[in-house]
Image (tube, rainbow, N blue to C red; front, side):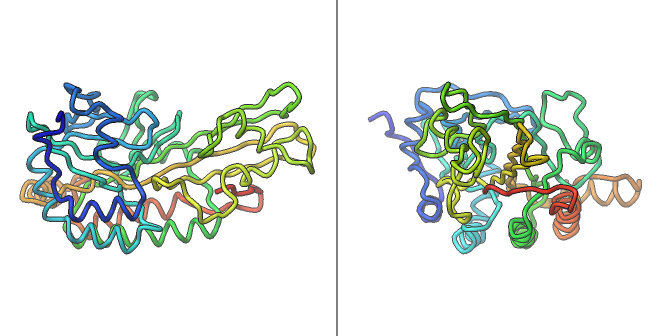
Length: 334
């Protein structure tokens, strides 16, 4: 058996999380990624130097862990499990699906992928300006880039905005009680300018593919009988019930806007987001950095204590995730 020697850590708790979010099993994900055969994954751009693997469908994300990361999760596992099961309908915390220890002793953290689609604009937001700028537009942008590009900020329907704020408050309260810091909100935005849909010629392009539909079939669902030749009731394509989410738990919102009923184009904005990197405790090094660099030297630093970190994180997102103004008539899809 090629899986002999493979160990699942903390699986009593993680199995109930998989059940709550209706995910694939660790074995199915291992098969999809050829985890046993692989010698490593894609090298990440972050400080950790971790390897990454994505499932071919983009639904799941695997990241190598250190033994210290594993100890952090074990200490956090009970509070994390209780939070995820209780708030599984609204939480923005990354869904840890499994922790897999391979025979070669590599440890893989298996999670959902918050960005299942292709995005030209991706941000990693911590609420801090200290060292938080990316110069290369091809990489993930950070907080200073975010401040410089308000046109990339999401415009959410009132009910989704309220749910977002409630989830952020609950999630960061749980993280701060566990003395976690340095977590981020990963955010992707893509804008599609869609022209008339000519059904006769099949000239349709769907910006997002619905579950159970091919792109070509899904694109035709944008077309409505009431407005032939135009992209129409997009929510009929994405999902009829606003409460329905893709089964692997994405947090995505899409909005549609046309300047006028006769406008031959429609703008569709797709946003996906969620909280990642939730396993860093406010330990001695972070505490010393905060005291010396932040207190003695008076510098702006990222590593604040848990409660101020959570407050700063929430403040930035509260200010930049907003509802539409009267000058921004939007129809919200999901």
